[in-house]
Amino acid sequence: MGPRQCRVCNEAQSKYKCPSCLAPYCSVVCFKRHKEIPCAKPVSSEEKSTSSGEIHDALKDENLQKIIRNIDCSPDAKNELEKAMGVEVFLSHIHRQDSILHQPVAPTSHITGGRR
Image 1 (tube, one colour):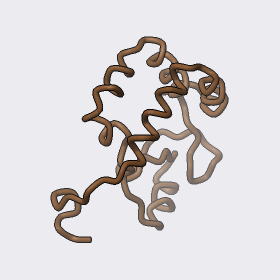
Image 2 (cartoon, rainbow, N blue to C red):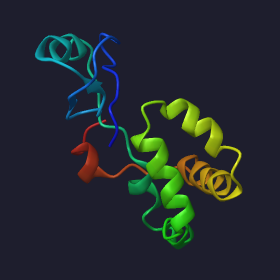
Image 3 (cartoon, rainbow, N blue to C red):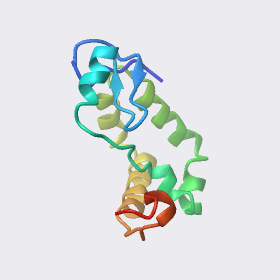
């Protein structure tokens, strides 16, 4: 994965990721500052879409893999993402992901520990 900027101080290159929400940070000081506000691990699109054979098949596409890898490894990920939005295979993948992410998900007690 390419270098990312610390999401806390926005000055240094991140070396670590928060174990809860995966936000990049650069130091113990920034980690402590980040933890002042509770965070939670986001539900990844992979977790929501594992039952979708269509998404699984799409991720086998080498062109799509290359585009995603370019975004992930780029020091200017925003620019890479903007370029990718003009590529049909990527745009189609994003639309599929969006439709899955916006489907209602029934609460499960094993995730919440029976609490709400």
